[in-house]
Length: 545
Image 1 (spheres, rainbow, N blue to C red):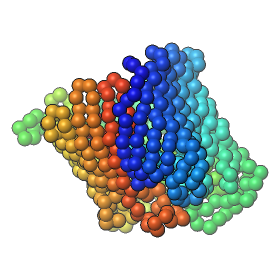
Image 2: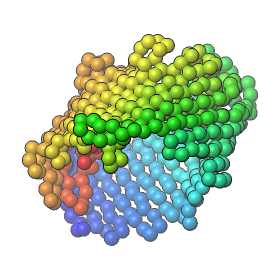
Image 3: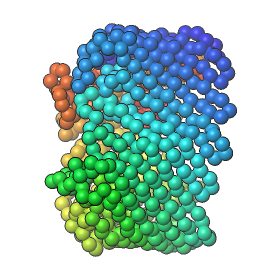
Image 4: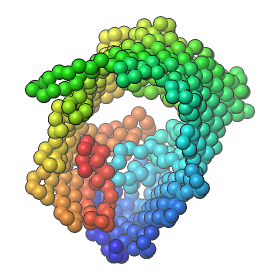
């Protein structure tokens, strides 16, 4: 490695205009280096960016800084930044403290909520609404893990206030263990203690203790897995807790003020998972396979507890999918535990080739409720049918799909299809369809097409049926040799940062299209001069490398 100028990066975005950067690499020592990156934005002025990386026997980390002494671009949203100095700081570190313990930390901060909207990598990143910073001491052994730390958040959506931020966790402590008591019996525990802070909302501490005893009986042809758990959750709310209240399931409905400073919840969680595995030899298209048939029954019992007097610090309803058929809780976080008296019936079949590779897997399942779910506020007798199908009949073709149909509404709740075709040695074609009732319906296609040994065309396209327009389109070209890679990519997309919020950005359109173009040079062994295109292509083109 040698110090010196790298090739410049040239680009253009709707928010910042033309961009030119001239990075200079500093090879300071074998275990640390730096890059200075002065930039000029035609619509906003000058920026000085820098990166510093270090690696020692006990730690490694990276510091990135961007500084704009005088921004003369237009402002959108709630922050007026014209004429201000602006900056972005990102720092991460991982340091070994002693055997089994290490410090893990990150600090991310922007000068204002509009910074990423104005200067963010329009090519490589989707809308970012928060910046999180965390510091923790983490450790673990053969049967246990623990962490102690704190997490804070900064709002970087210029069209909303800080009310939408997650709670700060200052501090938190977590401990988990899984101890085998015998060949078939295991004892475990998941515990946490967190202090939640958020201005204008109810604050407090929460302790969640969740021990369990689990057994695993079976052979390759059958299994029975009983599990007995007990969950105890206790709160200590702030002195002004009566100024706040419960708004129904996850924030909806009329307000009911909290009437306990130290509410608790305790309940057992009992489950029994069982299944059989049948197999036989079969042939398909002249090839031999092993076909399995795997029926599965999963029973779950959790008694109802009224939880209206418990705040919602970090809890949301999780998206329903196939694995939720076998979950003890459809809520993330510890503030809500669903009640249950239900039985899941599922069936899976697989095709395995002679080398043991799974070529086809098809599953379908449904939950039968013996009593209404009060915490989730549903009185359904049955859940939606959930099915998934994965097919890989050759190394060049792959199909993944999922489908949910509700007998309660007689409507499709969710559908997803992903088809991939490998082209030549390094080409890819992807097609996908995504549907979730009432939320989205989108078609997507992406391609990496080898024109020659060194040249490739890349592209992706996403169309929203709901919006009746293309919401994201990308096209570019790549050149790759033994020593250098060149990439030129353009992107046109609908910026959705402000959907549903106010005020309306300048121009008065809630679906304003932003555009970005970037040219990038990558020296093999030195790294990218811009670092923006590769993450974009990996995100938008499944299988890109």
